Image (cartoon, rainbow, N blue to C red; front, side, top):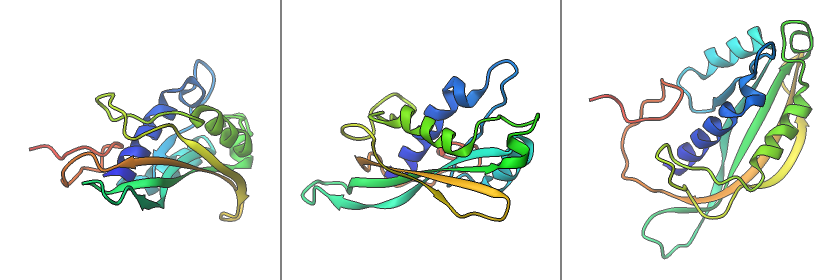
Length: 174
């Protein structure tokens, strides 16, 4: 559905960017969907191996276009939460990129971006609109920054069960 499709599209988009993918000696910065079935494991791996990760998840939304034949979020609200173990991330094994800076890079890449489905079709109208960026509390020793953004989109398919185990929400195999 819409919340899932948009967060998955943003995860694909950010993960494909060289900043997050890492190149040569640069360490990867994992970008993870909040509804990934392996979320806990993937966050622990990202935090334990690199000292940093980005979690993309929906915060909810407001329904608009009430006369439309399908539900339409106008807008849907989402978050890119950057979690950093400062000691590990800024050491020799980490990315060296502080959480506040990574949140700003997310903002730079997402401003006006138009999320698309895996087939390349636009998921909604217009582009992403940034709303706020702020530090947040997390567990001891972990720095966290939230980039909150909005995107208007509607449900574009029939209700089906999805497989959230693959890192991308897709129909389960037959």
